[in-house]
Length: 142
Image (cartoon, rainbow, N blue to C red; front, side, top):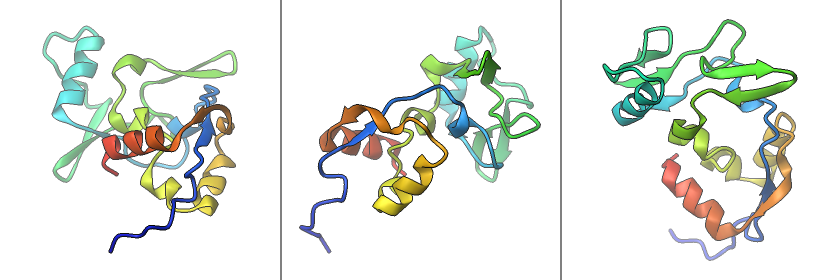
């Protein structure tokens, strides 16, 4: 049933990446990648065969996920001088490009605020209007 009640973030949200790397590390999880993502990443890395190595991508059922380094960092996360950067940033998967505007974080103010405890960029920096947030959220299909 359609709800006419405005979403809690109808006035928009603030977020600017601080390059802390927290969203790219921590507990084991999945960074889903499509065959097209894999091809783009491989091309970006200069791999003519269009493939990623087994230490970079793993099969999970019928899907594929990027792997993690020991300690939980994404295989493509690089830490240097207190900053964390993505070595495949221009071709990072949709899941990464749409952080933090994921359905599970937008379901309630509480969920958003809980996630913001581990992400210093949330609730700070650039204001994102409701329409822009919805476009990102829908692009992710989460």
